Image (cartoon, rainbow, N blue to C red; front, side):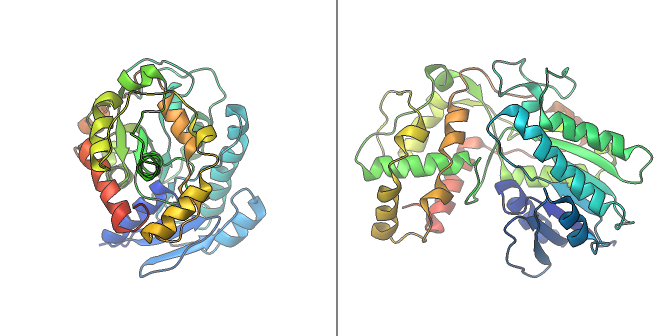
Length: 349
């Protein structure tokens, strides 16, 4: 059996970290790229690379001749949609420019996207979204990245795939887009303060349909798309397979934390949680939690972003099923599993 070597770009994020764990379990050799680097273990080694520095990227990756699969899940945040394009396209371009010439056995390049392709971040969009839906007015870095790969792949031996998850839920610290951590810390602080759990988003968001993507499920789908002929040069929506409303999920989350539920109250988490660092530090000490800084568990801006969706955010996943991917996850069970894992790791009380 041919040994696969994966280069996972964005190794310290929720998506990249779970993907590495999954690849490791499959027996792959893995090289993780991130700005901060990581701790090597077994068949996994890490490199610290600033992907915005083109010369440094090409220099540091020129020895990676063994790479067979490139999994791209890196992201750089910026204040506006337009400002996101240049750095995120540059990072992908720099990695491909560095790896393709030195890795003769490169088989596949996998791109992580999202519903921004459909304009989900701009307002109500056609649902359930399909991979064949027409594009929206740019700027949109996800689209630019895919178009780059499509152009680059012409005449090449490798193929590409694009994965489009909904909100990804998993365990990962210091990530700006981690809704499970937002909810867990928000609920834990509510309990610490002796107040009920209130949904903080827009009233319409409480009753609109939404779906999630479990990070472990996404890892399985990512490897499936990278290794199956039916998925070559295609994009796929990947979700748990069920939909829900926060109005039904919120009481179940509250029950896990032994909290009462009060009526929703629209508020900015960025604003109301800005003064909670002292509370968090006290909780870490009082409950014997892992020494974790408030910044590492605070993804409040992302919480505000998701809880403001007062319209349905759902996609059609039948294309992936027709192509052969049949995994699914119960979203309620996923949330409760993640919360239990956070407790076991002493990240929340």
